Length: 349
Length: 110
Ligand code: SF4
Ligand code: SF4
Figure 1 (cartoon, rainbow over the protein chains, first blue to last red):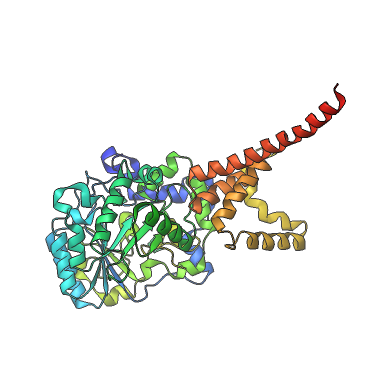
Figure 2 (figure 1 turned 30 degrees about the horizontal axis):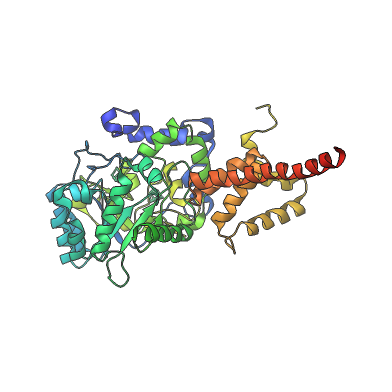
């Protein structure tokens, strides 16, 4: 599997993705527009609440090329955040009271400025969350000490593990990803991560390996805990269930497998107004590798910029202007509002 | 599509209340209660439903509970084992009747 970009796929174009999910078939054209759905519950336009999370996308470079990736990340991607842009992020963090900095990618650890940035955020007294894909820890000798580095900086580690069995995990994330993920989880546990009373949180992310929605978060968490503990002696704190967004490589899978219509219809039918009220774009601001600002990581990948006057990048960050913006929504947003809702922190209802 | 079974009809299941609302509503309320987490987990119930769907050979139920068991985190191996339970009981129920055949055959044979 290679990125859409390197394969020259038409879906590399974000406008083509939006067109595909909104207009590709009669059924898709007939589905209510997301903003109409919001309006029918008196929620259009959607406005941000208090910003709790400053999410920084360190770049699209990744050691993996997962089939469902919404970033179209991979080893062939070269777009990564520069030191100058990280510095601008630090200025914003220092000037605001946003409590959590959420570092994502790609594999954020591959960015040469990653460790320095984490240390600076820690110095500013903010909580750092790192979306670690686990296999990066074993990808190269220079990443082996990541668990220690995370522990030293009290980083909150959030890692994907689609399932506690090999077949599901490898089908979605690549050959041998399961074994490597298990080994990496053991290394994190050895540092105290996910262990009772250590204060080092290790959360896992489940997302369905196919065109279906995630089940109840609490029951899946119980299953994961039981299986990982009894089979491998692994412990973790919480499981987040995340719905696959119908964009990028997961969209390609939906199209190629003939599941796009059904999947979109399923998301629309499962629309939950309570989940709509709790969408993560209301408490998150997302920064792209090039410093541009977005309502969320999904809008970032779809090149939908923040609709705020005069504050479009981390270099001209203006909390007040951003606070009064309307959130830019489109059909992909149904991925956040289906059932119990979905966000980078799992179910929202 | 002009066939007895149309996949799109599954989505219209809720519409059975059109002809008899009260009983339909009662059924769906009961249905919802049955599948809630109880002494059995929602996942165990879904696997039972998948096995029963194969016993009653209902294509709607097979589609619906294939998706549902996957969503509840069941593995393909668990799903197939559930269907083997169906097959074993169906096969067994045929074979256990052969005792009657044997009884009768023995009775009327010299
Ligand atoms: S899903 Fe995560 S680990 Fe997989 S390719 Fe995308 S960024 Fe990398
Ligand atoms: S996709 Fe982004 S903008 Fe749309 S609802 Fe989800 S978090 Fe908000």
